[in-house]
Figure (cartoon, rainbow, N blue to C red):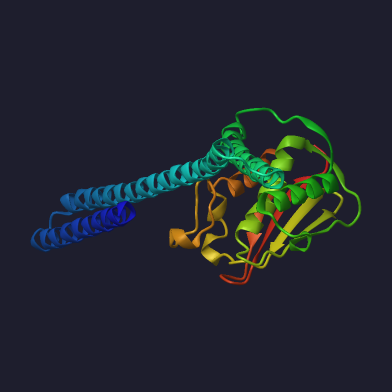
Length: 297
């Protein structure tokens, strides 16, 4: 209901701006026809008209942007609330069960495992939110050290498998030759994991994600993550890296998440002097995400 109300507000202000411009044009054309000999007044009239129209257009643009920004912030808060509340509620339920009645040893171990997985999910969400505040270009300096890319990717794949309870064949890694480069270990690890987890989340019920690493002209390392999931419309390929941004559509059709993962990926790439981008042939045709980082800093 809130989103529908905001969409109506956007439509109202756009219609109001267009109506004001139309009225001004009609009044101005009538004034010119009646006063066609007054050249100086005509010049200043044109200047005034241009200023009024520019003001109306800019006001409408800024208004629409602000409404969209508020929508994204609200979506982020709702997503974070859900991501925090769900594992906490699950852990509490299992703890209450363990306290209220006797549970056999096998069932107890199963409960402990579920609570451990929920704790990992909770920590992952908190880490995402905290990291977003740390990776701004004016914040923490990078701590460069030698990085073994294969080790980072394998660690991230194992973590994604455990977090999402996936079979081994759902995530495959084509490593190629051993690759080492200079970078911030913590940030690169976060970027690689976010790419892999994003591919898993948007793969639907059948997860088949392929990770590839390679060197480009001995200057860059590249991590490519391919999925066979929902795909991305062409106009959204650049927007998905914005903070809080979620592809428009019914909330029930979108995977859960904070909307920060790809923002972190691109921020890490920029801080290292590299770049990140997405490729897709469109909805239903899968996606490929690429993270490119210089070998030496």
